[in-house]
Length: 144
Image (cartoon, rainbow, N blue to C red; front, top):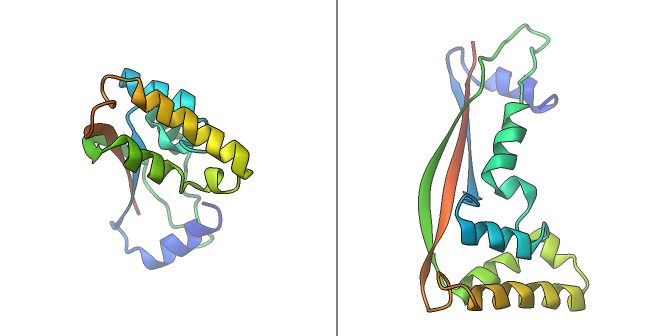
């Protein structure tokens, strides 16, 4: 934020609000926590889970700019929702994550195979379509 802060202050009017949104997997749901463990950070990274997102955002501060522009305290909220998925669609999505794309092919196929196997053996995900529990994390801060 050290680089972005002054530019945000320049374009955001006093009293204006900066907001960011992130989609996170809801690892408070037991089977999703298992998926996170099986997937490893290449498929579901640390910023993709609520606890890690909250910790990272708690440490975010927009600096006072050279012109003295200040920002209020960041506020956070999370909103639950679900994405309709199948095991194949979820594996296909996870296969596009940057960490997966840079893996050696053999390692990538093994990781995706482990995810497929996990999904095939969970009652929540083994039979066709299922809801993937998600949270949308929202961060907002007001320019003072």
